[in-house]
Length: 234
Image (cartoon, rainbow, N blue to C red; front, top):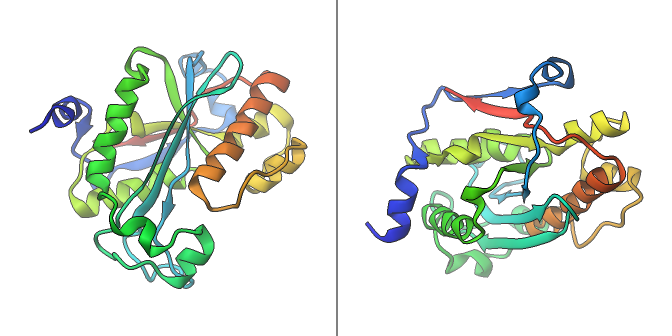
């Protein structure tokens, strides 16, 4: 086992099929002060996955783009970027619908590494950013990325999942608590905050930059209270 693999051993744990999501609302979190904490870093994540026009025809969906932005919580600027495309193994050929939606063509994933290797590379980047010595939380737009996509692929392929992927901040919930408006989606948040959309929707890295812009809006203009909103439990 190479060095990265050794580093991963203590963070990756078997992922039982019964693992499920617990999302916490603003109401039942009011008395859970340990969940309200200062984070040194917010890690903005937005996966893209294999898909087809008819929902449910590709199972499991597989991650094909794995971007994460490291946002520090003083200026709310981006201080690090991890971005990799991922080769799908179960359904290796992207559908025309998937390419149209995400902008990812077959050549962009064909010679890339599978998810196992990319997760190891991500952990190496995580260490290089010194995140193991900081208080951090992942930030997603909705719960799907870490509630469904990653767990289902890991279960299907027998991969373990790092403990740090088992809790996160759903930015929609923080946005609602801060503004009084529950957002339908990312464009709704951008519009409400008078932010200009960057790049294209359903490009993982572009979506991350747009989510990071909303994070900055909430942090600097709304003085939002960041808290973990969602958890995977056995």
